[in-house]
Image (tube, rainbow, N blue to C red; front, top):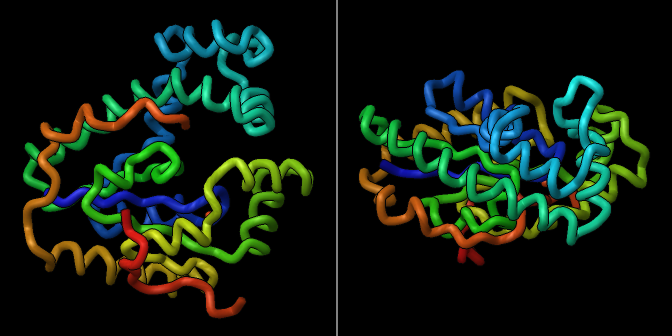
Length: 232
């Protein structure tokens, strides 16, 4: 079974591409959804976050105040690494559990939707990486409109992740999301069909399931199409 790593940057449109993949029948494992589930009140991850960051990151109903937590960790790299040290091991274990389930069900490939794929070392554990790309101006505008952030807050969140241009240069395939939804969808369909036509096999889940290190935690002719240069 081939393992595809899907990533981008905040407000690049990765979630849109992930939804398109689901629509055409690709099994997608959503790391953000796993994080949210693991951070429910009463879970070990939730309790560890409260111990690390205190009651300031809780809402009146006792659930996690994700906006407050985000303001803390996006402003302070040390605090972000502390959060990642709590969250990443649990997320990693659950992702591999779901990958193994899809392998047993006979799927030829699976997509891992991971926002911080490069930052947390997942590029070393997948067979190929797809990056969803937009230009910086579009990324900033989308983020401010979507999340109600100030320009300074938007810049801080973008700066907290690896530069999207660098991600695109390192990717095996780039999904250019600067155009229409129809244009993006055509790229997604073509990319998935290429995976299904390609050679079988892929990563041995049992050989990589515990391999991820405990590391920390999107001009007119921008990147598009398939890339191999710079792959590590």
